[in-house]
Amino acid sequence: MNRKTIGPLLVVTALGVGVVWVLARGGAPRPSPAGQPSAEAAPSASPARFALQIVVASGGVPVAEAKVGLALGDDLVATGVTGSDGRVVLADLAPGRLRLIVAHPRHVRHERGVDVSVGTLSVELPPAAWLEAHVLDPSGRAAAGANVQILGPGGRERARCETNLEGVCEIGELEPGTWTVQAFTGRHRPARAELRIEDRGRATEHTFRLSEGRTLAGRVVDDRGTPVPRARVGSSDDTGGFTTADDAGRFELGGLGDEPINVFAVATGFAPRQVRGLRPGSANVELRLEKPASLEATVELASAVKSLMVSVCAYDAHFSKEVCIERRVLEPPERELTLEGLPSGTFDLVLEAEGHHAERARVVLVPAQRSKVGVLRLRAAP
Image 1 (cartoon, rainbow, N blue to C red):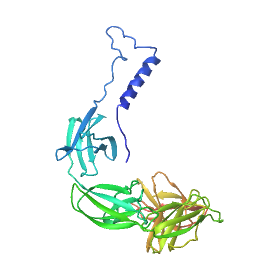
Image 2: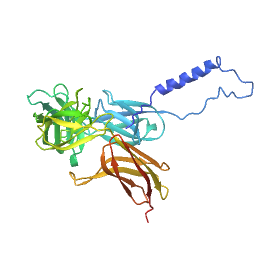
Image 3: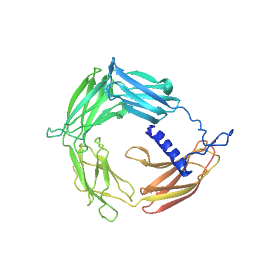
């Protein structure tokens, strides 16, 4: 989300430009002959600007430190934080209708459309429930810097916080109900709990104690066996942890479970590498990186379209489905297609455009080489 704050700085800048212009002409504007208007003296009309005061309260009590924003589409055009009196003024606003967003971790978020010329707006924030999470490491000490996630349907992250030096953090704006909560560090086995949050206006406290889990260690090397320093290594384990290889290419992933995992490595100048089915507890894993492959092709369409989806895909027996390792949008009339940074192997280059039959071309990618696919013609769909 782009964040743009429109403030008094624009006014100061405009005044400064005017002063420089006058000095460059050698002083104050000269008076025009009698009866003739002065072009220099006639100010250009500019739209009126507005200031909007927002007053935030809950049950008649001012809400301090509420975050207030005005948005146009997905862009924030002004932001502020309420003071102890629950008030904040957002100034120098262009006329029009914007979306007001008011948020506080211990209250329910408020959003509505507003006209910036109204002057003062009052916002009532109902109390919300919030989670106070305490995270301990395997030895029982406070785990600073741990992440706590609240997961929604499908395991998607709803919110998260990071623990302070006392191992504590809060997640607010919660509705009463049952939530799946997970605490992890990337170095330990995560702790997970199903928590029932009942009361608005009150905290639900829970302590998570992490366990050591298992480790997987090894080296990242290139195709000649030379270590690749500072490569990033991660896994499919539910810790979601990453680590960075040292200067000798050595890495260690911690906090893993007992089931086999997929491990991947990425480094500048190399194609991404993934190895499946590694069992935690291994200490001598070698992740061998190759120089990236590339491909080029020329695309011809039967009729005009706004965009063309280009994908590099292959059937993956592990997942029992086709997996695409690269996707790109080509915008006609652009015809020349180049894809770089690809792993080696045999793939399908898939082209899809509205009003056309999908086109597939088999391509063999070789490290440090560019594969030339030739001309691909998409036929019009009936």
